Amino acid sequence: MATTPELATILNIEDLHVSYPVYETAPVRALRGIDLRVREGENIGLVGESGSGKTTLARAIMQLISRPGRVDSGRIEFAGRDLSKLSEEELRAIRGDDIAMVIPNPRTELNPLVTVGKQIANVARYHLSLPRKEADAMAMAMLDAVQIPDPKRRFKAYPHELSGGMAQRVVMAIALICSPRFIISDDATSGLDVTVQTQVLELLQDLVQQQGASMLFITRDIGITAHYCHQVAII
Image (cartoon, rainbow, N blue to C red; front, side, top):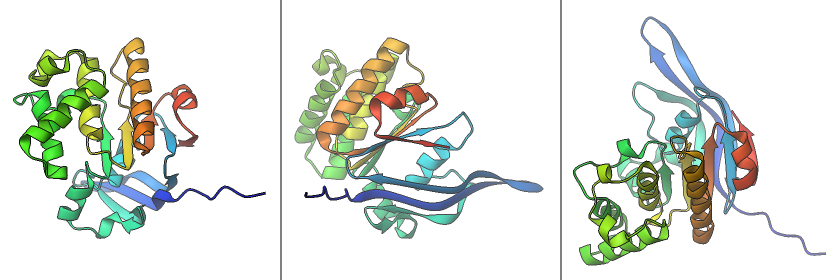
């Protein structure tokens, strides 16, 4: 009987240690010896209590550990490339294009002075080198894809004019517009009520599947992972 070939690994983390120096005392060890592997097209749930290091891991993958934090040792490979060895220019090209992150508080992610449609379109213009009109059309299509009512009107809206659920959908549109290969959902629906949370989670799962992407789904609720993830890792 023929065997199914094993899916290729998209993300491989080996023995990752991250710490934050503290003045006149021992550094805070945020991550100790983390090992994690995610295959192509796989959704992995990462579950842990607040303060366990989930967001630190997400930021380490993105190579965005806030100073004075640092990666002490370990290896993070994306599609066979060691991210720690890439230049900042190479990392900027990967972020948003190949790896994208959906964060839990869209108000801190969105620029209050720029319409949401332009913020989505600007990502497409930067990463895909599209002309303005084509990027705008693509942004409009993404607003429709994330099921925002009346996308033509919302294209011209500012973040403060949107509800929390719609703002979260805009952040999803920004993360997905370039069809990234790997998506990190960092407790992305924690601030929403239960009904809206379910809608957003189902929409995110559907869009990720449609794009054939892999996802690291970070949450404090292990019950959610049973519905949306292939495997669960505990931190």
